[in-house]
Length: 354
Image 1 (cartoon, rainbow, N blue to C red):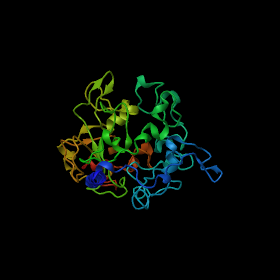
Image 2: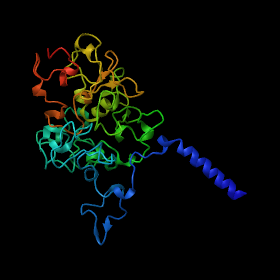
Image 3: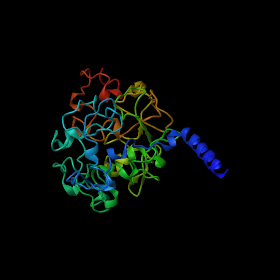
Image 4: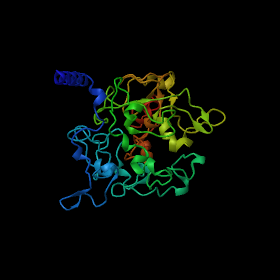
């Protein structure tokens, strides 16, 4: 009788779990051997001469995420490739963050076209080590992340290179919740966690299943914005769990106005006006994504007067073939019928290309 009760309870538990796939699905799935090895040794030799690597992985972040995307991440759709050894087809085989190819030392080797990351490229040759990231906060000098291209030694537990932005220890969080929003319990949106992102120290968002390998007005990531709390406390902006807040962790100096209230840099986490040329941006363009005041589901529309422009509206997080990691060729944006009608800057500034 006791054995029958145990079997009965086991069946009940299995039944409950089968109805809760979102609560048990790992963000990374598939055979453990694809990514991990216990001792970095096999058949009398090292699996990788550069190892062993943290978290018992078979390679570093770049090693696992190097390749050419096909059919969403990979042919099986389980790993997003963010670096390609040959030039990818921008916008076709690249994902939401772009690709490090154009900034990598053995790729495009152009510091202006991507984030300089340890293992892929040296430190930016145009910026002094002491200056840190462009737009860095003055009081962050000698901080833990002056550059992602060097080993971070102030707080080693925070990671270096890729892990300066993506916390690898959270890769086996569920990756999905019942409400469909990646937040703290899921390891944050794309595992982006950092001190500038508000009380919970991370980014909230809705994650596209194939990392935006295929995009459309109704098929894309959704990003959280916060124009209400764009105020400073002790010199830091309190923007909540938003992507703009996360970018401000290193680039906070770009998010400022002058004393007269006029923007001296392009605004970010600023509400798109619901008048004039801006009012015509109503169909979501993955080329120029917006941030939302709240997250519910993926939407194919943009609501001027509510939705916001953000850092990723213009930039790729990893890299692009264009200067300043822009999503489009800024030099090719010509007002008054320059040939790029309705794209790039003109997605929001809808009348400037007339």
